[in-house]
Each structure stands twice: as structure tokens, then as C-alpha cells.
Image 1: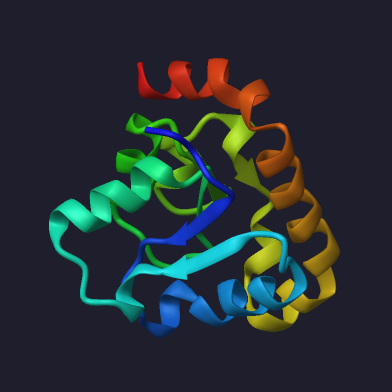
Image 2: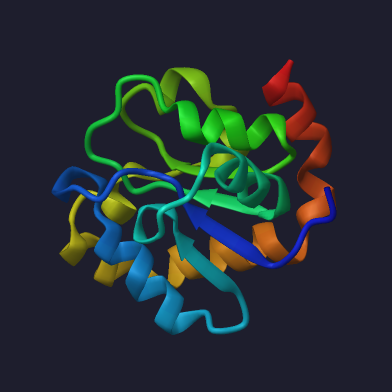
Length: 139
């Protein structure tokens, strides 16, 4: 599918998912479209279409057992941006992990907001550069 400057938050809205970080990033990076999937009543097909159109799936999760949504995204050539904690530490390639302390809490995020935003801009503006690693991740 053709990609657009879309960033998804594909997780359920719950305190341990830290959606407020994603919503704050939307305010600081207006050049991109940010979508919280749970803010809409999407069909499975609509959800998969968004995954296919997005360039990035973002996570700041404090609890995750498998992380299916970021992996579904990877299969559709959507870059995962995940913290280096939980199951992500074992499953994601280093290219797609960011330091856990950047989003260990909302206050930690505020202290690292520029680093998180810079990482997002790098992924979005250099999307094609990450495709070989994304293919390796899917394999």
C-alpha cells in the first residue's frame, strides 16, 4: 500500500499504555498525522488499512506480553518504535527500540521529549532507509 505520513497508536487506551505521551507528541509534530486507533470504531479491515498506510507504529507501553500490533505493522512495512523493555527487548531489532527511560513515565518523557521527537522524525523522513532492517525484523 502507498505510505503516508501517518503514525499509529494501535494499543488499547489504558494507563499502562501511556496514550498521553502519544497525544503530546501530536502537538509537537504537527507535520505528521497521529491516530489513536481506539478513538474510532474501526472494523478489522479499516484497522489493517491504517496499518498498511502508516509509516510508524509508536509504543510507550509499560505492560506488554507479546505486542501483536507492532508486529502486524512490521509485516505491512510499518516501522515499529518501541521501548527497550518488556517483550520488546527480546523481539525487536535494535534499530526499532529506544531507551526505556525515555518513556518510563510521563515526567521521564517530558525530560526526553526532544529525543523521542527526533527519533520519530528520523524514522518518518528516512523511512526507506529502514526498510532492509524492517524486512529482517519480519523474517
